[in-house]
Amino acid sequence: MSTWFLPALGIKILCGWLVGVLYLYYYDGGDTWNYFKDGVTLDRLFQESGKNYALSWVDASYLPSSLTYLNQPRAMLMSHLVSLGCIVTQNNYWFIATYFSMLGFAGLWYLGQTICRLFTASRLAVGIALFAYPSFVFWSAGILKETIAMGLISVIVAWSLQFYYQREPHRYQFWKYPGWIGAAYLLWVIKYYYAAVLLPIVIALILAKRIRLANGYLIPKALCIFVLLVLTATLLHPNLGLYRIMEVVVKNQEAFLRISDPANVIHFNNLEATWQSMLLNAPLAWFSSWFRPLAGETNTILQHIAGLENWVVLGISIVALVKLARFKKIPSGHLVWVLGGVIYALLLGILLAFSSPNFGTLIRYKVAYAPFLVYFCLIPLLRKLRTRRNIDRDIG
Image 1 (cartoon, rainbow, N blue to C red):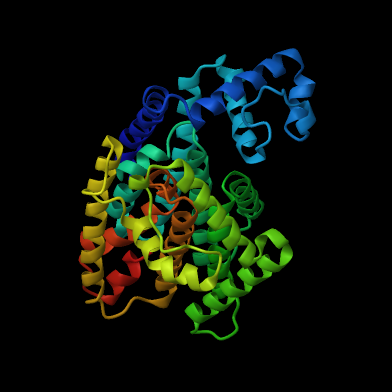
Image 2 (tube, rainbow, N blue to C red):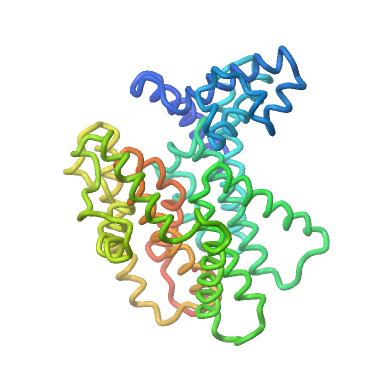
């Protein structure tokens, strides 16, 4: 993987700059420049009063009233992070985009190295999925929430894999446990719906391995623990209730439909906040979140590029399924992670398609799960598995 480092880092930094150019000249502004504008305002607050700037991180009453994201706490965290760059770089957008891209890349590189150590024969699949998958590389760079979120997701998954596969906790690595909790909390603050799907899955996988009860039933144990975690979470707060979540999803979908071109959205069949309606529309949500827009139903240059890419992803997914059908057995210790990754991509994809049915938005949001999907599909295509030993080593 060492030969991937400099080219991948260089491309990631370049994509971070291109994101800024795209939003500046094609979208005429947008999130990335709003974060920067707020960062400049917060830098001005720092120059006037370092104390008030420090307090503004925890007390909104110290925030200037001119901030774009004044009443959006999650977006304000991004503005605060950008303000740190503004203070150091004297308000240089391109330098800040560089360090954001490098932070996100650091998490991805750490995950890639972790996977390669555990499953050495899947190195090429890791390299393509994390560092050469075009839309993912582009939309996880620069001053965007997705950049930081993917860095955090990568660290969480990497540490979770280490917790799962290590025989005994290493005495010098206990710092990873509070680090994991801190990363999970930051992910929840920045992109709570990513965290809401990812965290119960990885926790369930780790607990299923560590709990000695019912040895040999790893997948059923993981599934039961996952369901218990989700049900417990829904009881902790009214806003986490399943019906409440469905109501929020439908309201978000209606809001997107009001501001979107009808040709650029997913058209569901009378989506309502009921189980029947959600289940009826779930197959369309799943397919759209993973493979749409396809070339032929696109309108803009960016969508045309994404459409061609989605055809490729659809093609390798079909071929991968055919090849997987020929495998005699995948050890449950690895299969459970494959299933966990697929369930993560499935649930998050459906949730995002329901709540953000605009194709342009979905192309950007899907970076949270798309590389894992591509990774799983590429393994059987790039490595000919002949023996159980090969399967045990390659599937992760």
